Image 1 (cartoon, rainbow, N blue to C red):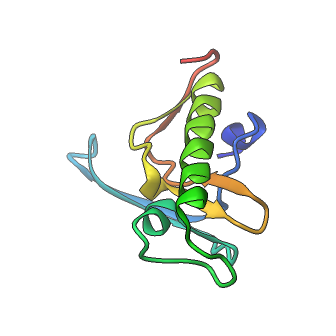
Image 2 (cartoon, rainbow, N blue to C red):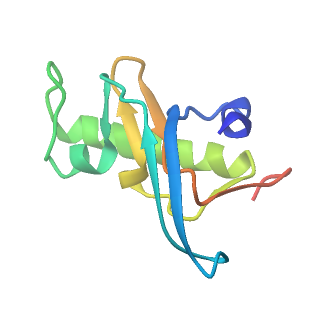
Length: 116
């Protein structure tokens, strides 16, 4: 997480992490608990109109802007040499207060020294 943050990618603070392995080698299941961010909601929930923060009105223009920001965020993550095996809107939080996208779900992250 600290390496991801040092590359300029906003991330949530990890509170706990656990995993289940078969024969101690093969990852079967994993879970991560992150610190709650009162200003952020999951991007997929917003895009599917399941959740809207107080004071924010859902619009096609806002959805378009967030989708564009998601593409820019994906490029920044990629250019930073961060590979997240499950990079999709359900692993991104939208922080409306700070106008940020935040990467979550770190158990599948691999860091490379150069752009991907």
